[in-house]
Image (cartoon, rainbow, N blue to C red; front, top):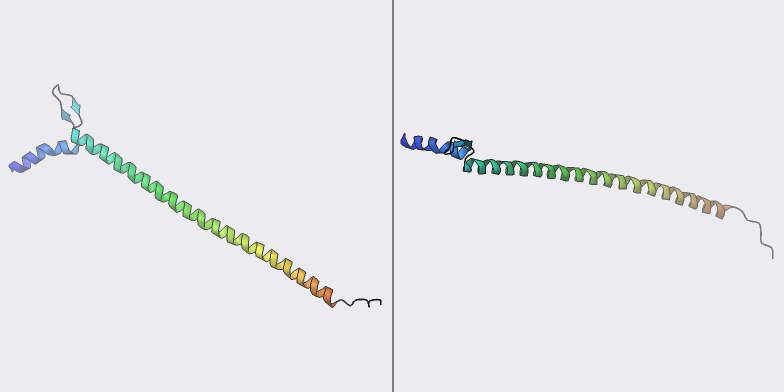
Length: 105
């Protein structure tokens, strides 16, 4: 029981419970203050990592959208080029099968 009593006496200091100074003012214990600062640092780090993860996810989504957009533009350009090539071939075929007037000698 003696160990438990001693532990309970020290535990409030470790947990940051305020302690009285010589003139009766309440202030956070040194260990508790360090613990609170450490907790804030960890909380801020978690928030920053969460923001970083969200930014990475958004960048990946944006990159996928850009790839899809570029693929669509390339497909449209290929369709236009294919149509132009087919029109040129049809014009060439029509020109070669058109009867010509006999050459004058």
